[in-house]
Length: 166
Image (cartoon, rainbow, N blue to C red; front, top):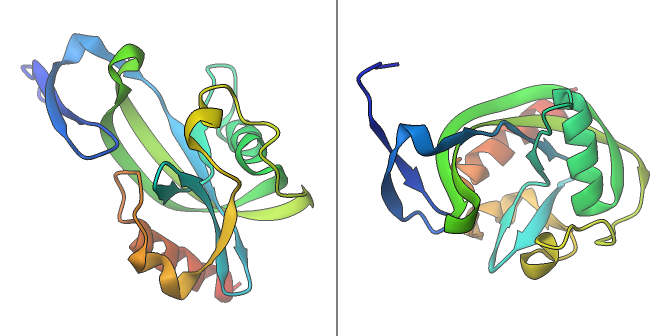
């Protein structure tokens, strides 16, 4: 990293950019699960678009623990993590009140080992914008709006190839 760097460009969920002083950044690694069932992928409807089930890893959690907890909270399903498929870097602001984050987003294939789809474990913030997770045909993902900084349709297609070739 350029030690002389004093600012970074942070994006919000709509892709709007804002110049932010680096000393305002918080470190927030996050992890997401990609679950397939046949030709469908499980996605989390949020606002008027989608994201992958997952989120921030707590300071006391391992990556695997954070993945299992976040996936369960957002879907009601118990999973185990499989292969790491994608890693992305992002400077992000979820809202001005939550500040500015430098995050590393990790995406893993997961396997369901229990549970049923539910939104009973949403936190108070998630209840405002998230809906019950839903299964979406892989062939239809390029028509969806996603709220994350990755090329989600490409990520799903790449993960699906790995899933099919297990």
